[in-house]
Length: 203
Image 1 (spheres, rainbow, N blue to C red):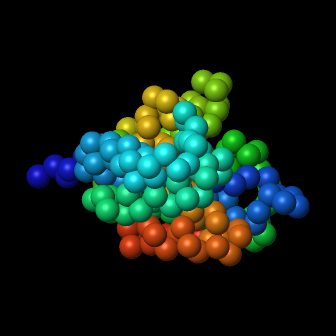
Image 2 (image 1 turned 60 degrees about the horizontal axis):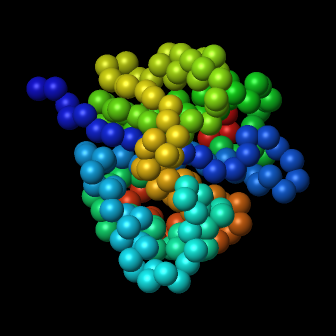
């Protein structure tokens, strides 16, 4: 019997480069659902609970929003039937420097394989980090070369305007970033029980 198809939404938080003020850890988060509809009302519910208290942006970016509103978004997410997969790059322990675009592809591959180890059929939407099709195609090639055998993966690169679910993945990545780079676990604690796998890499 064929395995069920799941849907994943991937975003990141932090800087691939090393340097003062850039943080030690680079975070990739993937939110996985059986149906994208599960994520549909998270922002509207959060806004209703905010009762106009917070001014929000047209496109949600956790690092630009009032932290009270980010908290509400994460609380609404925690009520949903979702799974979260996290991949963390420790830049301090990285063995060597390579082209950051290629390195990003390797990190996404690792995060993708975390999900595929649980759900071997996956339709994955990546945050459109790169505008050049040539770079996106290069990244897709590397990811497809590294995914585990016997799995199915469909990839696409989209913006938050095209797929609002990516805004939620941004909130999760930001919450994990706060824990590892700023030693602030308040936001991470809200979604902790939804995290299925969390992997730290030095690659």
